[in-house]
Length: 94
Length: 137
Image (cartoon, rainbow over all chains, first blue to last red; front, side, top):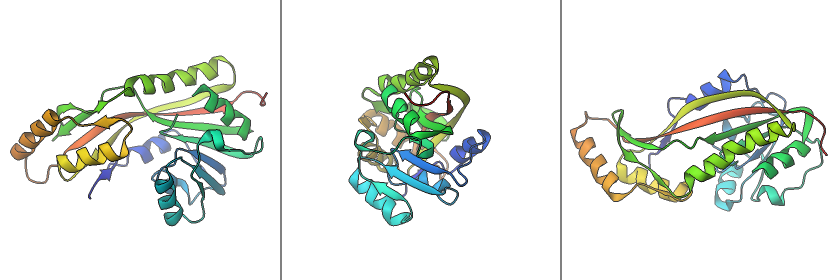
């Protein structure tokens, strides 16, 4: 299957236009899916917790990005200490 | 959705940020060579996206977050064929489909289009950056 998402790179350009940087940040990504967005900033972040209720998609992310703490759970099931991340990213999930 | 943002507020450090990326409530056209053939049918999609849109001003109004930046952009998804794109959307998008009449019209448009033209769908996406205004309560 040759599905091609955002080959124009408009999403990357928008992140750049917004002045976004995840450099050395502890990131929580909510709705990570298979990690399409995660892979775009994973090289910058200090650590990433990526969650999504879709078990298959999370397994795919875990294979592609082994350094990411990928969890097949919803935000309701997530328990993190207060003030423990620098960035919360809602990836097409709000 | 407001509850999710409240949870996020508790988890981030005072100088941290929330980044939200989600499609707007705009209709999603199916295009061939830049021409709109029809639209993706999304059950409850407009209401869902409108609720997400409303959550942001709600938490800003509550002085939980300050709105730092909003950027909108076009997000295109291409398939080699309209059948491939239709199947992908059914399998991967929430409650969405390309109806048979749009598929048929897209096939006709592709038959008349120059070689190499691929069908695509266009989502208008909004990126929002929020900063926490006060410590978690």
